[in-house]
Length: 331
Image (cartoon, rainbow, N blue to C red; front, side, top):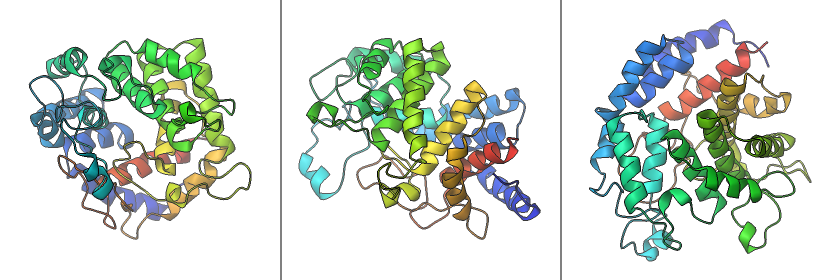
């Protein structure tokens, strides 16, 4: 993987200024991941997520019982015709928690701890009324529940054990397994991998969870993050475009950012099989040094955090820059 040239470094300086002229949820990650700022400095910026900007705005929509929109996966009283006609809603508890984790809400704050307690006491999954932190039945949902729970200090070991047991023979996961699918999917696998990584970061993991995470990574690496193993063709052309927030959807930038995050925990160097995906990310840099938002999921949201498809995206740009920094600085 090639080293950045002078022109790219000049891009980076201007783009970093643009990123810093933003929300605290982006600024603290730029300070930590791109600038290498002292921990005390980026932690001070991270603390603002609770009281300023998007983090505070999302927290302001929280119900008194700790949930968002009165439901775990969909809003209370949701009419499924809206899903068919407009799109899946993204305002319920599970998506709010995942977004707060992405924003970087500090899990040790009183507000975060109280939120976790209230959700544990009051939130029930729409599927069959299961207590929220015990998980649902679908691998994608449970992967994100593990990620959120582990991040916010919840014991989600029982859900981890279930996910480990649901791994398919090819090494990954598929949320259609219960309906007979025997082949893993990119989307289900990345959702579970992110959960297992957050669990490992919080607890050290178990031999079984670490083995499962390794096999899930190998599933993606064998396919160079986007290709069919059988034909070598892209499994889905949208895997090569950039989406935010991803929710449950997959793209190569999400996968690369996962591998970067995993390497921060384990010290692993970039696998050579990431190279093609990295080159595709590099090729999508705009002339001004930013990366675009290619598309966004339809459906109800509390508010937008990007300027819309086709425009430069701070979130996509942050991800792309820290992935390239990791790859380019690794000997």
